[in-house]
Length: 342
Image (cartoon, rainbow, N blue to C red; front, side, top):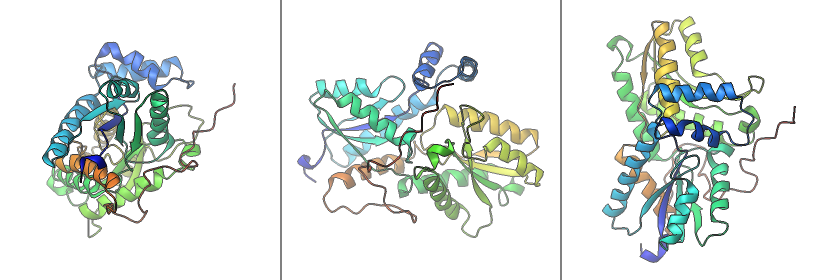
């Protein structure tokens, strides 16, 4: 590949999170801007962050991932910087775009940390990037979603195998595998490929971990918010653990399939709430680590970059859903319908 084929920079795009207690409230205000979230709900979520030091693990995970991707870029003899921008906290996407323009880096490829397509995990980022570059010389092209890439599936399978081995020996072969992802309102889920992609990734991982079908597996959801009257994807992981306990299941191993990069929601919803509910039932519980620190994951990001900018490149993907597009059609992942004023 010649230098002329490559963009000027590779932008890693993430959700963002607070760096300390003083950041928690303004961070949550950014996350919920334009949404009618009750003050007591915000206070509840803020307290969760504060109970764990007020810092999201996602920031340090992204810093480490950036370093890993930059190392992989250089290992392959490519000449482009790797930068990072967040939707909801520093470094904001807008700040990173400004910095890129000041450095004379105008053609940018963007990789999104969320592997799946929905309004909140894909198009909303594209809208923010579009707004950030509207009066800028910077142009950004997104790399395709990676939920079914071998560099995502194979490390996730390895992490889940490790989680199974951490269970008591008598449960390593009969634990139920739970694949957890962020829930969505059904009104949003019904208009995008998000749920199908989560189920496909879960199937691909489960078939590698349990090729003979010795482990039952299923998809569960976490992190729902908003009005309890609005239907969301179910079952919630905590509710499902209750049900499994009632069925006599004695152990679960959880794969955070929707979260390749570790963040606060993984730590709170799985390591705290789900783990505590399992313990209350006397159920053995293990959670697979996220895959962001696996070298194959950093290599995957560079693979996606080269695939996008190498004429005739063959995309690497597993499963049966086909290759997700680099450029989303206009009808993809529409914004959720606005609720009428009350």
